[in-house]
Length: 446
Image 1 (cartoon, rainbow, N blue to C red):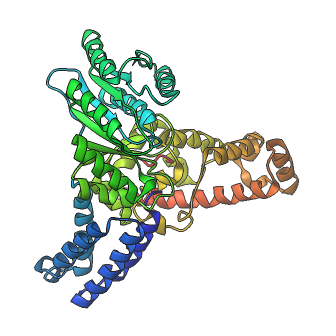
Image 2 (cartoon, rainbow, N blue to C red):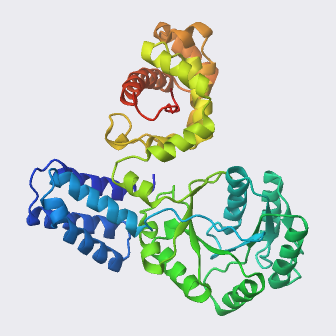
Image 3 (tube, helix red, strand yellow):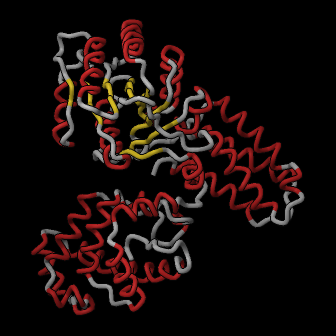
């Protein structure tokens, strides 16, 4: 998960203060020293850290904390609120023009994932908002940029407007909007050219496209993994174009997360979407409050509910919940669950949304990729029906046969059998944990 290092540091620091019945100014001072270091290590802008620490310190020694019944918890609440405000306070929704089409200009440096993000955004607009987008290939300089967008259009079964690479981007954008009006498209997404660095020529052209199209949104696509550089890029584009939103890509990568925490504070431009993977549905609206909760180990149950409701068959979920309670869950059920989990995205990301998941035994370092899931499926499919229903009958000769049939090792078969047993116990605990929670929702494994 993004912010992993920061999350661990902050949660460790806040844990010390959580249960305190009295909180002194020196407690707050010590905690804020740790918080400051954690944020700087995560590559958050120095001035942003300084302001954040000052605001939290002032509130943490104020009356709302000192006079409350649970000062320790109140301090954590202050940190969560300030962290949420730092990232924009509340979700910033995508614009809708009074008269369609709504025009969105996608800008950014080369290599940030702008063309792919354009396709992902179009997909999200169609799936979640029932809109009819038109993709526009206005990057005429990068070889294969037009081809890339057309390939994405084919994958999504969505129209792409192109006039080749010999017509100016300004003319392409102008004609695309006319075409969108004729064919009643709700949104026009213009994929503009990027460079390896910001230069005058690029900016002049983008200003002209902006002038001709009068866009409702100008989204800067920026790579979260570039850290502080991402914030500097956002600042430059904002000064020259007046951005309306930022889309952070690669937020699922090995990133320290500083860009997401700094970009809103430095540019006053909201983060509207985040890219969390390579698939065409791996783009999500950015919720500052949910992200703050996840960073502080409070989970993100709302996002988990949304993911589950979009992917899980409710009748099957009820049936599985019964099986967990009676401990009659089999490897066949497990195979079915793997298919459902795959629909929801990476398992470590899904588990990261559970409150306190990183503290739960066995969940701390869960990392499962598609390849590993494929190996697990191969092992299960090499078992007989009896073995899937009663894993306890699997002795050493059966393990050898299963390993040979699946092309895996005996150690991997042993590991899966142990993990399966541990998982059954853990899911039974989680079933009990979620009793009485939001009606109509079951965790995806249940």
